[in-house]
Amino acid sequence: MQKALPELLKEYDLPIGIFPRDATNYEFNEETGKLVVYIPQVCEVGYKDSSVLRFFTTVSGYMEKGKLADIEGMKTKVLIWVKVATIASEGSKLYVTAGMKKTRSREAYEVTRDGICVDKF
Image 1 (tube, rainbow, N blue to C red):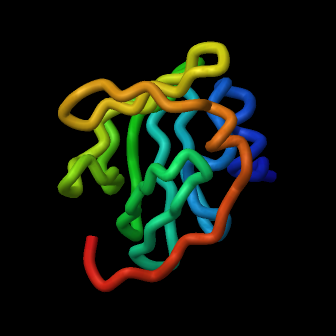
Image 2 (cartoon, rainbow, N blue to C red; image 1 turned 180 degrees about the vertical axis):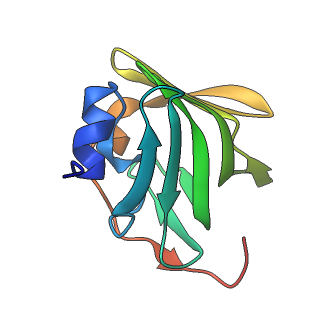
């Protein structure tokens, strides 16, 4: 039986809200650390620190303790939409690398939120 995605993220010291609430199906290979998360539709999630993440229907990356790297299928808005490459967690900080490394409050990502449907990724 596969554990819930929020439980898996907690195990790897990542905030449970880095994916939209309806992202419940996923595949995880413990040997390689490869994570593939399936999202019902292209959407974006706004967080309480005013940051926004946009998700494709499939998001993949490699997970290790406190870090999700080589991410495909996720963008963030930094004046324009930029591909997110890495999300790393360290204490109360969350580091989102999308072209440049940006520090965000981890607390803003500790709650799962609903994604809002958008037309394109």
